[in-house]
Image (tube, rainbow, N blue to C red; front, side):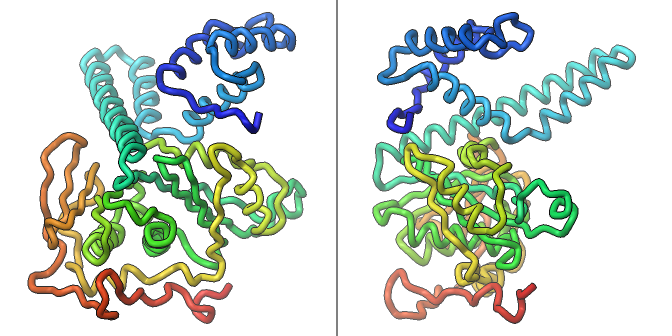
Length: 374
């Protein structure tokens, strides 16, 4: 199985789902054949033959379905959950046609916005695969993992160490990096995210890239905040880069065995590294030495306006380009008109500490051994 690429085109995925739907013995527990191994194996074999894919067997059918299912069940949408709850309440109470109609209309609008996001991400992936000067990434934190992670009662009810992992997924190649550290090395704030994104851009992003598109969720404390906005602007106007939610990160995190027996942080790193083989194994970047985390919020406050000139929560897209040195462009829809906001004070020059283009002094370390030792 390790040598078979399970990637499919959108058309092949639709065919796969249709074939799978026509074999209820594989997915319907009420079907009499659901518990019969021979019947299920025969159904999977029929699907593999119908797809006409090279070296694609019955075992790959089961694996592919699990991957597709996990990609849609790893994360839930709070808006859809709220919609279902409200619909349940309205349907049980007195009939309110107008309220049901309004609720359904708002839900359909929510789904259209989500579809626009996925289309935008898919377009960015295809463009980055065709153009070496363009790249697109998705980034997100995984849920906290406990250390140790064993079933002993004495351990379960005692204070456990939290293990953090931040995933950056390269859409063009499928390459995936995990920045890992424990709560003794750092927190999960904007400075940490800015530091890891900065490290990726300068140490792992191809030097030929001139335009970078970043996809993330709307977590204000981590991704969608003024520190990240200023960092992107700073990188674009200090270096060569001309930069600008269910995501691939959720699928990557779903591959990690969170029930594995773990006693040390290095055990989680091993679990992450071995969780995927194709298209390439996950890369783990250990941040335990604290040298990666920098005080970006304090550093950027000297170069930008103290307060963000626009509300960050409603923003759907944000763009930064070399042609507009003092402004950030943003919009609240995926297809609307951009609004420009000034973020750099007038007559503020970028200080070049080294005297060489594209080089500058890094911020101070976010943590020191004396200030963040637990």
